Amino acid sequence: MTGWWVADLLHRDPAMLVAWVVWVIGSIVLHELAHGWAAIHEGDRTPIETGHMTWNPLVHLGGMSLIVFAVIGIAWGLMPVNPSRFKSPNGDAKVALAGPLMNVALALLAGVLGGLWMAYGSFAGATFHDNLTTFFSVGVVINVVLAVFNLLPAPPLDGSRILASYSRPYAELIYGPQGQIITIAALLVMFMFGFDLLWDVGAAARDGLMGGIARALP
Image 1 (tube, helix red, strand yellow):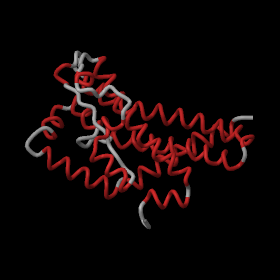
Image 2 (cartoon, helix red, strand yellow; image 1 turned 180 degrees about the vertical axis):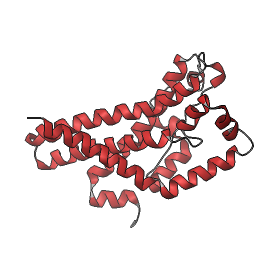
Image 3 (cartoon, rainbow, N blue to C red; image 1 turned 90 degrees about the vertical axis):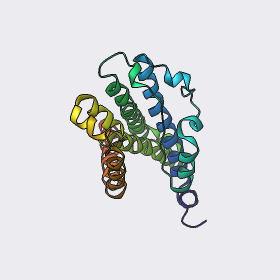
Image 4 (cartoon, one colour; image 1 turned 120 degrees about the horizontal axis):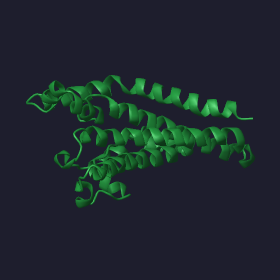
């Protein structure tokens, strides 16, 4: 099936395929669970009541997201929350921020482990060493991209909820009659022009973190 990303990666770099599937799905699940844990901490039991506090990726991604992932390799998730239940005035911002912070934590974890593996993992043989290096590398890049992307102040991304919590004019704009048009326009612009830049940011973070740790170790 020429041109299908799964077939292409399976033929060219199976380790990259495994890393991509594991990190994309796993990072999105943990991103959504972080929203859920933060919402529960804020007094909202909606994530529990709707059955979303689970490790099952089918619950978090849903059918359409998984179909898109199978076709083109990207996906998204959803964690239902009810901001009216939050106990603190800026609860929505805290819950929204929890997802990107989880991705930052995962990127740091992958980067540290990857740097250690680059420095000391050669005992496992060249092939396994390279494959596991690829796994950690993909983990850093994907999670940096997810963190930065979700922090953009464009609905329905987490950044828009954070900004709306502190800016009434912005909240009135995105939640007003023109909000849906703004959402569609913002997503189109990001998908058309933003992904190369986001990928460059992720690659720079990977090189700096993994490479820096590997070079610093004796």
